[in-house]
Image (cartoon, rainbow, N blue to C red; front, side, top):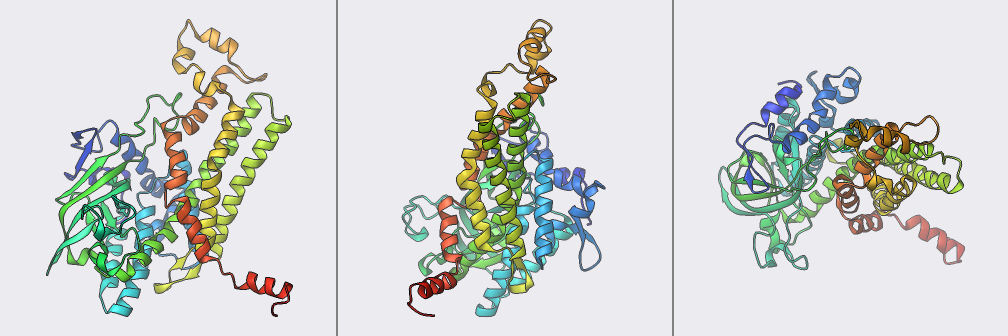
Length: 480
């Protein structure tokens, strides 16, 4: 196959997968009243490949001369990473600040698997790299949507996997056969899996030898027997593009992903009990995925700046000192994130298989900068907008013949700004910051792609103290 159309992508999801939403079995994600919105949102990636405005960004040519999604291009240089970042940012803009993620996260995992499989093959004489390469070619040539399941449910977080009161709180290998393995357990926070074709499973943490059964990585189709997806009900789509300009058209699903004695063919197994490399695979995936994260956060922070400037203009307050101060802070927040994202690509390193890895120190500084300041930036925008964010009448009042004259008379902005213009902008800001979607984004800021504490640990681990220590020793007369 070559590149798929949006229609082909949607048809590929009608495969008998087992999904439950609010206690009911979902027969078809493409027609379900909630999940179909996530499918349509995910179709953005396929639409971009067909759109002349975005095709050069979304599509590249592989070694055989065939067109493939740029997401599946193995990054070899800073330029490759910058183009990948630009693609992620553009797709997220088209998603009105919601990342698409159906190829971004899967390809992040594939890049990490190339690197760590090579390390395992070199040290342990395994044959994982050829399996990874074969699966990578399958995904790229078939233009597949690929999700990742990494985070285990964990149970008692003070205990390692093998010491848990329930042995399946971390996903594990329960049987090995000549033709494959059988796994049992559950993963959580699994994004976009309801509307993906394949899922890549990765370990969530470093492991000891006693936990080797939990050191497992593999890929399976979403309709594999024994795989059950239980959807989070959070953030159902809202009706009306006026009152809900984002959430009426865009949604991402999250699932508890349960593996009940699922068989994985041998050629789809990329790690099996090599506990020494579980932490390396988890970290390497995160190095790529946090770069994806800071790339898709850029449209969100740009939207905060633009909305703040426009609502200040509508209110006639662009010259007020405290307003300009808040907007300046929003600009600095956004452009610092953008600069760090770019520098992470420019200061990449070449790892195994000549794959370019974004600079992990800068990636984690960028992610920490975004996460620790996001709620304050939202507060600035809400402050500039006013309490009318949650008290204003909606489109129905604007359209009703009895109330329309009153809404138009009393809810306009500065001279030249109509009530409809002001209400449309306020609806956008409400959807962005004071809705289910706004709460979702605020939680993601803290926890998605790793917690704030995980980012701090990585920054401390990655920083090279040699130059700073040498400088202090020189200044203090403790050495040259």
